[in-house]
Length: 167
Length: 392
Image (cartoon, rainbow over all chains, first blue to last red; front, top):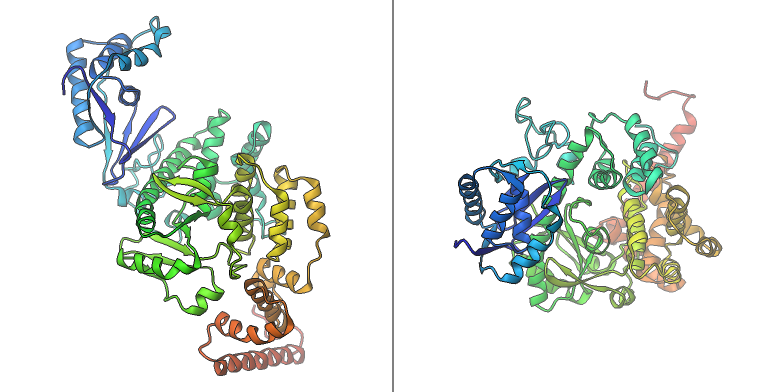
């Protein structure tokens, strides 16, 4: 993708929702589930608003402390990963209108303190058949909840009478 | 679990959970605090309560509640969102298939409520999608489903089409689908659904155009399907009715609601349900509607049927007469046969279908055997010494 390239979310095959700062993404074709937090969720939001790659980088330079080269490398890796997973697709070069509407939303944020940059991550969950059988109260990680397994407890034996088996 | 006297409705804990999930401000916050102090959050919730957890999560979040249990609730919400998104996507292919073949559809229950009222894929867990088609298109629809790899739970007979309202389909991947040809099991009369169809609203089901019931018909549908005995109180209808009434764009046409209930002999259920919603959850039901419902005469047979349908089976009278009265009311409601001659002629075939008997010979044998058994049991109970034979 060119530096001025734009991406679009691969709708309607890809659906997403932001819950409490975390963006969850689902590829309906294959059932894979993804979680984006922090910078990854921010970038997803920028793509949704029609930002091009340059727009995204400019925004990140403005909001995060870090070496430009490293930031560009990590973000490009992340964007490639989104495309590889068919979550996004190229959408041509960005138009000036796109930049303006995207930039205009945060004109008042210029003076905010910069946070330190950490590479965006795409957390992928592909073993959904198993994860859907998890009891989301007793078998999940205490700090993050379903679909993160509580590794200390391991994968338990299924109880056919459990309410989690019948929806 | 401690049950309220009315096992038909919610338990004390479930009422608090419903309030915490549905209501605003202090009502929601107090209910959450009380519920959270009463139940074991690390325990195993009943099915009805568990299904409300995604809704609880969104309402607590809206009220800024912070609690360690919110992490689990958020996970349950994510899971419900994931499952529903996939269910809608899969079922949209089926609906597209129907549409391409010229089959008109109305989505019912959870699908309609999710699209029109909850407007969120994560808050109402669903196992399947319920779709209504015109009775004359049922066999075409069944054929389409078979060709797409779906199987009915049992073969659909002509009697099923006449007396029943729906059947269940499944496919090799475990997906489920409910095909309806009448919206109400309780009112399968011919040409009875024309108002339900003409009042339906166009909606988009994951990009596929279909219809959904208007708010008034949906409310009656929700209540009628919710008000029945279940070992665990089926509380989801309460949340559905609450959200439906509060989110309805066009408002509830109370006159239509009452008239539909009266026409379909569903007054006792509607009256009880609305009274419960009004008094327990402050749902804005006009007093004039309650007055109207109270004034509508209800036959003894209707009342018996209501009691039979809503009572705990262990407490039911179970006498032959009460069972026959229940089936007779069902029959009259389903067929619209209120004339004595029509009833005398039509009731035996219904009874044979209802009791799943192959012939009238089998039906008569069954009734005679049951009657003898009951007389014998009564005689035995009267003759034995007090307490003898009771299990220790």
